[in-house]
Length: 418
Image (cartoon, rainbow, N blue to C red; front, side, top):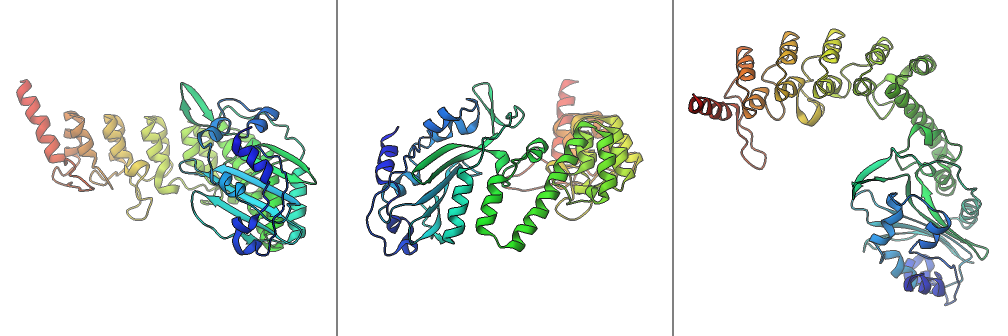
């Protein structure tokens, strides 16, 4: 146990007067021993997780966190019940702590993040006590973490994110510390398997009963149903489960509508190389050009000429919408620009036959892609189709070479070679 953990055990949160300001005004000095080890070494020993889980080594990267200083400086009424949720933020992994405390006369929650001084929020003592006891009584989750939830690579091994933080609880003189599974919270990204688990969202549900009104809880439950359906639908699309897809589409035809699920169904089917799934989705009203036509640009990026032909034959626009945030697909490129960049003349001809605008682009023109790749045959094909060699001079922090400049360099190289 670390020195800070021992100090925390001795001072044991006594003193929210200093920590929480006005919320704990009128406190008197008293001690309480919560026996929390904020290195989480004991939690990982008692509840082992894989060594390549991010949460296995995250605490060691932040041995001195805001929670240590705040808890060590605490002096006030003895703590009757307390709960701490500590996790990395979604950016640099900096620690965020939500500390729930109940004393004889006060109840509240404080958020600790970096050096920010955020006011604590008072809570209903009865509901807070019930929340802490409910979480303390959670049964162990029976779940095999996935080896697919990879967020990076370190030392040649994948880094997994099946856990999102750590839980510390104190009530009635008893303590509990353990890592938190991602499936327990609705503000983490979960797989369809996690969402189907009987313990899915259990921490978030308990928090909702503490913090929300009944109407807000009902709204949240409705959103959770949509999320679960969307995740199941996405999984069925990716795996090509036609039977399940037909069942889900018959039960709720709206599931293919943009915005219903947090993904573009047709685009996902294209990535899975499932033309049969694309056809089924289109048959049930899915928009082939949803998300600014990303299905076509995805097929072009994958070099899947058969899928490009299939999408165009079923109504995909060879050009993206002319306006709006999704006016082009992946990284601002059109399908034609992607095909030109890949040097795929057959795909370029196919797109041109279907009306692709040879001079359409948000960022770099198809002709510029060909010129920068020193692909004279592609340049000739695009010029014959009406490409304008002087059509691009874009400044975005620096001067980009336009098609004319790049083309001139190609011709000079060819002249020198001859």
